[in-house]
Image (cartoon, each protein chain N blue to C red):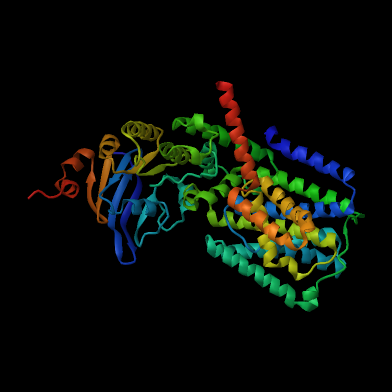
Length: 255
Length: 319
C-alpha cells in the first residue's frame, strides 16, 4: 500500500440551508487514479471546488502530503501542487493554444513585469525554457499541430485536452479532472483513458470526477461514491460494482 | 522575435522623419496631442483590452500626473526630473490604494467604483482653491527642462513624446509576451481558471492597475508642460470616456489599437470642422457606425482582413 498523499476529514459544505457535502472522509494514495462518482447533485464538483480553494468548506479539513490546504486560496493551493480542469472547459480563448499551456508553467517560474519589460537575460532564458517544456506537454496531449491557433477556435474536444495539457504543464503532484469525458465520443474517450494512464505513469496522482462508467471502471484504482452529499461507498471498481447500495442508487431498488 | 519589432521600428523611422516634412506648428501640436493620448490609451488598453478590467476613472490619474509636476515646477520651483519622480510615486501610491479597495470587485461594480474615484479627484481639484487654483486652473507651468535642455517648442515636444511612446510600446509589448503578460491576459477569459493555475488574481490586477495609472500620469505630465495651463477639466469623466472610446474604436487588446484610436479621435473633429453645425452629428454617427460594424475595432478589422487574405492566397496556391 503506497502512502497517502491527500486526506480529507469530515468535509462539510453548506450553501444557505442546503448541505452539499456532509461529513465526507476519504484518502488518496500517491500514484493512484481515484474516481469520484455519484448521481447529479451528489456533491462531486463541490468536493473538487473545496479541494482547490474555489469554495471553503464549512467544516472539516483537507491536507496534501501533511500540509493543511483547506482555507487557502486557489492560487496558493496551485503552488502547493494541485492542478485541475473544469466541468465546462475554461480555456483562455484570447490566447493561442501554446500560450495556454505556457500559462501552466506559472507556478514553476517567477519573472515579474519589470524583468519582462526590460527583457532581462534571466527573463529570456526563463521564457525559452517555458516554451520548450510547454511544447513537450502540448505534444503529450497531441495538440502540437495546433500550437499557434487561437485557443477559442479549436473544437470542444480539443479544448478539453488543452485544459489537461495546461494542468500537467504545472507538473502537479495531484491532478483533478472534472468530467473530462463530457461531450467526447467513444473513440475520444478511449484515447482520454490512455492519456490519463500515461499521466499517472509520470508520477502524478489523478482524481477524476466522471459520469462515464466504462471509463471509470477501466482506469480507476479506487472509487468514492457520493450520494446527496454523503459518502455512500469507497473501494476498488470490483467492490463498487458489487455494492448493493451503489446499484440501488444507480439502477433503482428492486422490489 | 525580430518580426515582432519590425512594425514599431518602421513606425519609429516614419515618426522621426515626419516633422521634417510637416513643419506647420498647428499640425505638429496635434501630433504631440496624439502622442500624449497614445501613451494614456496604451496603459488603459493593458488594463481593459488585455486584463479585461474596466476603468472609468483614468482621467483622474492623468490629472494627478499633470497637477503634481505642474504644481511642483510652477509653484515650488522644483526641477522637472524630481517632480516627475514625485508624480509617478504619488500616482502609483494612490492607484495602489484604490486598486486594493476596488479590484476585488468584478465587471460593472469595478466600473462604478473607478467612476466614483475619478469624480472624487475631480471634486478635490476644484475645491482645493488655495493649492490647485480650483476651477480657474493652474497657469504658468514651465517647459520640461532636463540637464539644461529645455523642450520649449512643439518640435522638441514632438520628439520627446514620441520617443517616450516608442520606449513604452516596446516595454509593454515585452510584458504582454511574457509570463506576467500571459497571466494578465488569462484574467480576461477566466479568473477562476487563472487562479487554479497559480495566478494571484487580486495582486496581478492591482499591479496592472497601478501600471496603467502610471502611463496615464506620464501622459498627463507631458500634457501639462506642453499646454502650460491645466484645469480640473482634465480629470473630467468625459475625458475618461474619451480615452475608453479611443481604445474601443482602435481595437481593444491590440497594442496599436490605442494609437489608431487616439489619432482618429483627435483628427476626426479637425477634419469635420468644415461641416460646422453638423460636426458633432457626423462625428457621433461615424463612431456609432464603427462600434456597430467593427466591434473588434479598426485593428481587429485589419487583422481579420489580413487572415482572410492569407486564406485566399493559400487556397489559390493549393488550387
